[in-house]
Figure 1 (cartoon, rainbow, N blue to C red):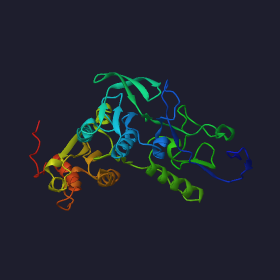
Figure 2 (cartoon, one colour):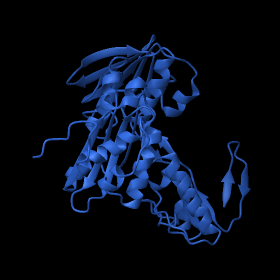
Figure 3 (cartoon, rainbow, N blue to C red):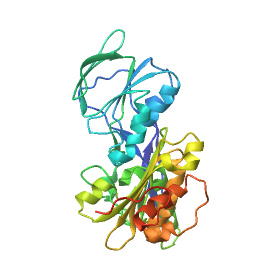
Figure 4 (cartoon, helix red, strand yellow):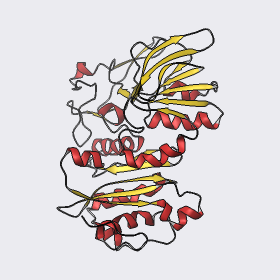
Length: 347
């Protein structure tokens, strides 16, 4: 293999096995001009300046995490999302506690498109079209956070027979092995979810297989976390996915307003939700919005991996008062043993 550095110097590298871990890059929007005040997530992380008025195009995890950082530094935040709620992969009701909090700090427009971006002498003029807002506004910087694409181009993969799909993802088996048996691939370049913890587990599988071990990457669940305030975390099947797949499920949803620990910690804005398959009784998905949700979600991950039922979870003794016990309360609602809130009416 020949490697060319930034200065054009070529170096020949010989190897028996290789791991492609080239990651991903931010997607751009057609019609958005090239200007140092129009950023992708990498630009935003460089923190060269704090704009007074900051437009974020895309209400997903990256956009909201950047909003939290720049808002804390004094920027006035406007978020535009074309879908009907922020963090679209999560259920709308799970995101609602976050929405109620953020609307006090940011301007958030859903079901809205940015129809034009023009460079001005003093700022960047953006035009909007949506249900809540239409017209123009001027900003000091714009972050485009509308998704990512795999970095698979320019690697010469076709020269060695590595198959790449129509979206640019390297196709791999459950050993993280590509169509070329001695070349493996991990992380964003092999597909969703594009998460660091998923990539690191894939990397372990790839290297262990190269070392002669027989290891498979077959996770039952991979959690997603948005490091917002409050945090949002979810895993497994969401309610909207369950409806689309016509899965009959039972839902337990516990508001943190009934949690003594949440109330005493000034963290009552939150909710824990768990979904269970009506046929098998096993958990199929869960979500948490609230303080430390990214830490709390892992009990649900383990429950999914082990096929736990609502009864298994509700009969597991949880320390009181804790935020973690809200997951048990959600299961108790389904199990019918809840005493911390009124049980739901039977239909």
